[in-house]
Length: 349
Image (tube, rainbow, N blue to C red; front, top):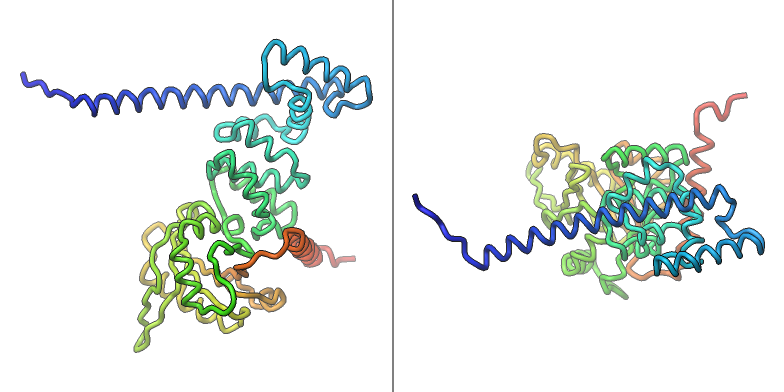
């Protein structure tokens, strides 16, 4: 009988992998157990009406609890920690959803989400943390970059947003969660006069940062994709594939404002890709036109969603955060007001 001897280095690597996997599982179980414990502590504090330390009496009780718990269990149970727990169960009341979230989210993730005032934004970031498995640093970066406000999702009615989030919990992602407007491309280092070729080359040079801004799931396929139609050749700026949407995504770069003629160009590209590049089991291709600016009324009249085309502005120089935040919030309010006016039955007597 022949015996094979495993090389010592290979054996060491295998054993290390087993140990690291076991440690990861133990840490994951410990985090989930601790997070659910914090949630149950908060439920108990809610019953005592102590979650916000109301009045001097409530604050004294909470401070006394914190002092005793810190003596017995150490860090993690200070007065500030208890007040954070005090909001936890209130903002995440459904234990079934929480159990799903803690498979990927740590207590540190939740701490980043608790200050958010908009419940829809909070649910969005929580679900994106879970689906895209963000590290503990990412949620604050995404919140500071106003990711939710820049998604098409945020511009729908609250009912639609909740339906989309429910769909995400079922493991399905929609284009409204993926595409953004505007895209923040300040990392490209472009200023002054530059051409579409300069923009394309800067994106290729900073592809890692570009993919981070585009969002999890985008995979780069090709630049200047050649499409032969009859006697003419056309070239698509950038071609990507989205793993969660199971679709090719065609991206055209425009230095000027969006023009209605851009729609026809993108429709040609999408039909060609659908005919020649779409693989079995994939959804139809989507198009994204990145332009310097866009007129909302033109986009609305062109009904671009029906043509599987999205329009978004890109910013190579960021305005002050307050200006960007105000602009996005006004866009969300305007979109939701328009949806409310056109909802069925609203105009009936």
